[in-house]
Image (cartoon, rainbow, N blue to C red; front, side):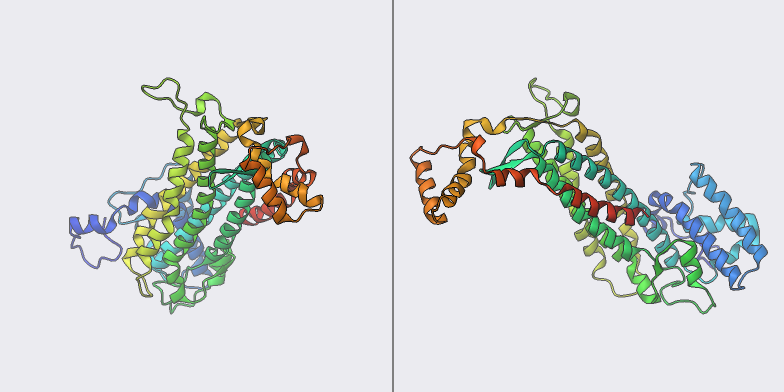
Length: 434
């Protein structure tokens, strides 16, 4: 297929073509419907400002609508001879409409075309990530409420520290997701700006109406400066990568906790055996492979912003082919994050927490701070009480009954403010999905 930028019939060197096209066609299938929608909005605008006739616009829109339907029905394939999806859509218009089809590229460039496609795609992916994150959040809130009074030992430095609860543990990760979704919402607001009309990064001399395409494509606003619009290529990807990395950080830490708590040395939680794997030689093994892979995948996702920074940060303004590689860095990572959320949403409802954990003798020093607090309430200074309780521990004379756990502390363990966290999360989530 002839390149849309070719001015003669001289074929591009095969090696050069394969190197420059790279893996673009593998990822452009994701952008196909957005390219068609962008072309439809652009076509409508061209007719509104009188650059093409209403009849020509209607003809092109009819063909584009047919292509869009084929894409949505799964009947569209990218031509492996095409340079990219943008070239193929234009080629289809020219094949069906002749000279009329050649007018679709008036007042735009592949630069703003691909910018538009990627932004529309990323906005949809942000909504999907938010929806999957919401499902995980709601599970955590339910489990936190259900187990808010089941005591759990807290650890610092992996040393026994103070009493906690499963409610606090589940609730902590729910509140972490609140911050993560707040960042995702901020990134959505930055990406949600129409770049179409910036052309190759220096605007167009045609009397185009960018407000029209902004409205028809559902953007919140536009990138006003044509040069800056082009600068958002790479920036949008980096920002989304940072938001994804924050979510991945929360998921990875949770997965690590699950692996730790599932081990026999802790034995705080369990899952049905179908969610674990065995060993080829050790018949007693029940390995938490799901959560180890979530942890590993999320660690990779957290490296994503750095990879995109290294790719794009040494570039001046204007378009550079380097940014083509952002697709093959970011797009698979989006899939991976969604798969991590999906598997966690599938497995988490099956978690079982163990009650009576703190009855084990090794946890008796978990209540040393409570004993100190009792002494302080009885008139001792904190430092004197600390020394007294410390000496009791050294002399193996420390004694404390769980039943004596400070009621205020018990209240703080059980009072998780889940309603406030849920309200804020749902408010942000609805803004992202809306």
